[in-house]
Image (cartoon, rainbow, N blue to C red; front, side, top):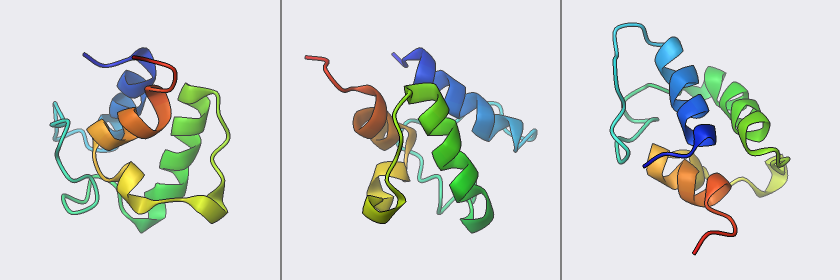
Length: 81
């Protein structure tokens, strides 16, 4: 089950790819070219907006952005469990 923040990130990615109707939680966003180097910075800003937390560009771990599941764990699962 996705949080509203993760849903916002998925909607943003799907909005950039009208040929797609869904994204698998473990689908590699970079390898599948759903996110490329030109859209990566914008993705970071979408995650910041959806999570309410500023992301430090100097401390970015690419693995945190590779899949929807990784984005969920890194930016939306804080304080749960």
